[in-house]
Structures are given as structure tokens and as C-alpha cells.
Amino acid sequence: MKLGVFTALLSKQPLDEALAIIKKLDGVEAVEIGTGNWPGNAHCNPAELLKDDAKLKAFKKAVEDKDLMISALSCHGNPVHPSKAIADQHAKVQRDTILLAEKLGIDRVITFSGCPGGSQGDKTPNWATCPWPPDFLDVLKYQWEQVLIPFWQNEVEFAEKHGVDKICLEMHPGFCVYNPETLWKLRKGVGGKVIGANLDPSHLFWQGMDLTNVIRNLKGIIYHFHAKDCIIDSINAATNGVLDTKHYGDEINRSWIFRTCGYGHGEKVWRDIVSNLRLAGYDHVVSIEHEDSLMSANEGLKKAVAFLKGVLIAEKPGAMTWA
Image (cartoon, rainbow, N blue to C red; front, side, top):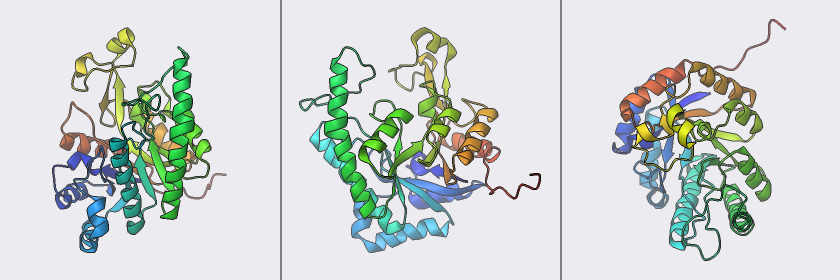
């Protein structure tokens, strides 16, 4: 496994400066780069790079000169949004990202499953979280059978045609794929081996999941990993539960907040995560994503690197001389 950084946290710096900052972090060998939609495209605009060979060459050189690898391109969006204008824009960025990955020789792209409306007439996404009243079952049937599976069948076909054999969906509440069960549902509904996980523990911790169980369940389809933590506020969660719509900046009143690695769960939890990733056959990049509102990006990144260096398993296991 290699340690990497999702460069979105350095989006105010030009690419060269962001890469220089990352290169100075001892132990970091990879970068995950946003290509648009919610991560933004401050460091990589696929539409520009695809039509300008000189810019594409300069982009590749900037990364290569720092002796870094690109772990994935990320274009988290909602390509099945009920607003056609939004869906089309997000889907275009996603397809441009796939085409750019092909040119760069990158085999994986990260995004969300998306969430459609509850019916053809809706204007906003509708995330159904329970089976009653029975209207919600109709919502889910429409979303999965008429929108989600047909859309992703086409995307998988397009990705395979262009050399991207790993679409890494980040499980996140608010989207149709938000836990292992719904990820497997989409993978099986679409067919093939392209749909897999960008596993971000922070989104699963606050839903009450045990990451050891999650990793074992997803063995073989974990295609990328985000290193981000989360802490449940024992007072607020015990009063209001974990479904919390207060602004992320209202930290003291929220039931949970995102934290940098080690500030939500201790070394034992993260050592178990890393060990189980190895048991599940994952040997790609552990990519640090900073969304800790109690720390600056600089401090959060440095603390995450220092913490993860102590728990990451970098070398391949040797012979069992004891067995």
C-alpha cells in the first residue's frame, strides 16, 4: 500500500505548488486529482487537456517531475440528477474524466452513484431511507429500475471501451449507493466487474458501521480508499441520533463531524482497517482527504500523514518461516 493525498484540499494553490507541498511530506507517494463537479478542477480540467496536447503533456510532466503517481481521477457528482441541465453537466465531466484517464493510462475513476428524483416529474433528488409510507418503495423502484441501473450500464460500457475498468463509487448518504448492500445491488444490477468501491470510512462510521465488517463484505471490489475519520458526539447523538442536517460549521451542536485520521478513532481501529484491507486483497493507495473543520488543511494533512505512516503496511509479506 502507498500513502497518497487528495489534492482538493490544496485547490487554492496552482498544480505545481500543490505537488511541491505534497512531495515534501515524508512517506507520500501518490496523488488523487479532482477533475470537476464537486471536487472542482483547479488542478486538472479534462475538457482543456483533451483538446490541447501541449497542456496534457505539461500536466503529466508536472506529476512525473515530482516522482508521484496518480492513484485516481475524481469527479464526484450526481449524473442522474432530475434536473437535466445538472445531470448532463455532471455526466459530461464524468465522461471527459474517463477519456482523460485513458490518455493518462489510469484505470480508475472515482464518483458517486448519484440520486434521481422520486418520479419523472421531480426537480430535486429524493433519497428514500425507509420502506413506509409505501410511497418510498415506489420511489426506490423507479430510481433503481428506470434510472440508476440503465444509466450505469451505459457508463460501464463507455468506461470499458476507454480502458477504465474500475469505477470507484463512494458510499455516501444522500445517494442511492450509501452502504455495502446498495453498492452490491448496483454492481449486480449492472453486471460485470467495473463497479466497485472508493471506501471512505468517515461516511460509514457515522452510519454506525464496523469497518472490519465492511471491508470483509467488500472483499475484491475495493478499488480505492479515502483516509478520513469521523467522530460521533456522544451527547448530541444520544439526544438526536445521527441523522443531522445542521451545517458542518455548527460543530458543537452536531451529532457527528469529520476529523483528520486519528482524531475520530484511535490507532487500534486504523491498524485493524489497514490489516483487513490487506486481508481483502487491497494493495493500492490510501488517499488522505482533509475535511476536518477544527484544523487547517496544512495541520490536518501533516497530522494525517504522521498518523498513517505509523499504521500503514507498505511492504509485501515475506515467507512464513514459522509455518
